[in-house]
Length: 631
Image (tube, rainbow, N blue to C red; front, side, top):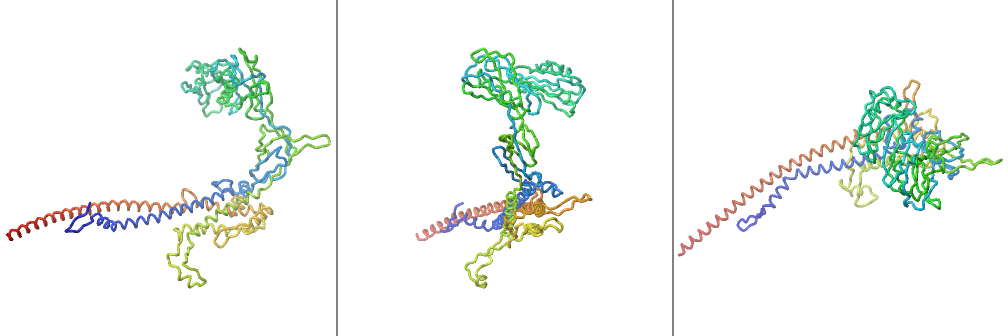
């Protein structure tokens, strides 16, 4: 709305309404300030909660090697010790060309010195073609027959035979057959469960309820001719053939049910898969073998190598050891082209287990990575040791396993740093911050130089939640002490170089801590972990350590489902939501009031306009009357 002309004056209606509404909106501004203040507190609580969570994580990693605490604290000291950072170990090999080792804890059983010899490394089975070609993508002519890899297992440990049909042209048929039964004892008896045959494209599925089946012949009768599948019992095995050729018709066999006797009766499954041959080339044959192995879940890999004269096909087991040996068989191979006359393979390397000794105890492993021969240590075998000669002993590698004091110290430093962050935050909320205008040695002068506004504290000053957390943590830190009677000379944290400063933070003398670890590792661990044990009556006799107590306290203080900080934040958030609803409701009333004021001034504007017209008319009439009188 514009301005109103009242006998030579201008009345700014918009400005008047705006000023009136500014006065009316004062309660809203106060509520908005209230919301901002409460939100600042929520943010401060969130920051405090983050610092407490960081402290909890560092404590839990020290206690359990993870940022999460278990539901129940381990009862005995040995259980606590085994899981804590105090079992951190170092592993040092005297000859890393022969073996390397990594220690990852697991108690004191790993500590000590071990003599190791490596007689033989684990090897991956390798076969290489006796024939070769001068170009990997050269047309090698038409091939007929099947190349088969036998004596291998799938990811479930079931025996498999992979067959690749070598018939050309480039896209050979793909088929799958499944043999069910042990080959020795036919399936008899009833069971509960389902056998499912399903093609790759999902168009053909047979679900067979085996509750009423008594033999493989019963299965044969149900499957044979069903959706194009064929079935026949041969040598006490049920052979099932796909309903057609091509990748889509290759099928899977799944067993489901709760009766294990069904699976035992059916025995291991054997699957023969024929993969696509991607071309009449050496690289095409390589890809065909790898595709078939991948689909069947078999750990072999086809590679192309060059012996300096020709390119050859090399088949390598993906895993080492005797258990991963395989053999290559050929059926009716006939090379009708410029390639070799046969597809024979020779074993270039037989899959072998590693053979080694630890403290003169002979051991074997299918892998060169030894994860369980020494508790808490992973050993990587790299080379064999030199054998002995007459009058000269063979080479021995010394493996020393000891306490990783540096890792323990770093872990305790992390706890102290996280604890100090919590203390500093609490101090920042309660300690006054005095900004003086001038400085002087005179205390009277100092007092005269600052106003109350110069003294500021954090937004959570006086908060009882922070005070309770502060008191609980200080109680744990200052009250931690091993009871009399424990077999250690350590009693308080000062024994380990940990000192409480005047502001409540902690400082660490690393040399003192390392000395304590070196002098009495178990005694040091007892102080931090506690010495809880099970008494003769079966009850837990506890003497909780500093970190154990702190971990328990922090678990409650940081519980996401209900902790005092979350309760305080939830209370503030609820109040904020209520105030925001009040602001919204008040704004609606203010809008109505503003609309009413504009309506009132519009009416006044109209009245003033009519008055101006009336005054103009009266003025004209008076002028006319005056003229008449003059005449």
